[in-house]
Image (cartoon, rainbow over all chains, first blue to last red; front, top):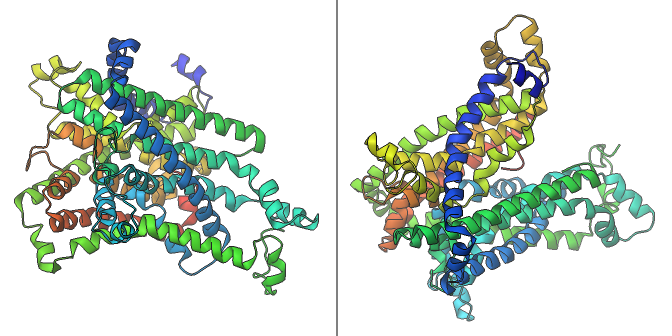
Length: 280
Length: 294
């Protein structure tokens, strides 16, 4: 008891031992123990073993596709997500609230449902796909299909990380900038945008991290052609179904390392932003 | 005072607003871009689910649910959510109580670890349970001696679902409870209330709307989880197929009407969740504050 008392500041509120103890226990059993199993298996395979798996051309191309398309999709989602966040916060127009509510859709809609919906829309005989096929563009069953699915997944991250900050912008800064003779564009680029950059980067990293691991919404529209449109998570599933646990764990540990790197990056961005601008 | 703008005090807005906003054509263009983008990427897919589900009429739509496998999938999904959601609810309340009401060493690490499942691919989430409980898993001797089947059975599906939705409730409640501080609770305690009494009559009313939304979102995510469940389920039709997995089977069998009909249940659930969230936000903005990020 004395040891714990030194770890936390004294308080009259009861229940710390019970709630914290229970939460740590559950966290350990549900999250940390299984992740340790992967870490243990990966260390048994060793760096050399993981490199061997990654040098397989099919694995290498799947990882390249997953990372490359996620990057592109996160950029596009951040760009349009920023415009959407700006419009939804700053302007008033009919249907604004409805549109604002819809941004959360990818959070709530099951990925498999999104996947089959996107596949049916962008297939050559679908509503959008048919129209695009007429001008020679094919989305479904190509890497472009993966891109569409990952933009869908990334939108809410991009919008929701920036939106609260746009709402908090001090209008007086904009007024001051305008009275000092700056054009609207100059004000936006030099006064409004800089404090938003950390949030935009955070949203981008979240969308990117989520995109690397995304499975359900991608596999239906991707066509899953090895070397062309096969993503890394799908390859894990394939390796597992072939009982190739070494292969599956090697790919999984690379993806896990990438998501931890993203998590670290987000924390660094937020720490930097906190020092620089005094907010997240 | 920047909070007062021209419209509030009845002044003509054109001149006052023009300094701190874009010109009208730019505004219209930006609105058009945002609306077109959100319609194309978010609204169209949901509309497509319902359009495809009803493509062959109401009869075909309802026929899709007469199938025994579809009913078994719905039953399993409800069962899984009925275990996973309360589990995460209890964890979320305990964790957010500890984080929001106390200062202790390692709090930042604790919160980061709670968030961890969000940065793990659903497929990897499934894989780690196979590494633990699969036939060659680390805990296989234990489960075999107890004659327990975890993966490729219902317990594995429940565990994977809990993992994937693990941070949802805690993440919603922590900022909410932090914002409300501990003043109310301290007052109640000095008046002689017991800990549980304080939680039930002071804390709970303060967080009820955030709690309700987090439970709804957790439920929608639990019922709709695909990747993690797909890895641990083993795909035994009628036994370990949840609704999303059943949708996949129907779709891959080119049974599109049935696939989209079953999928429309989940899409409807997602829409209801969002509608309730929006209603709560409009009516009780404070009760859901600080919930911007999921």
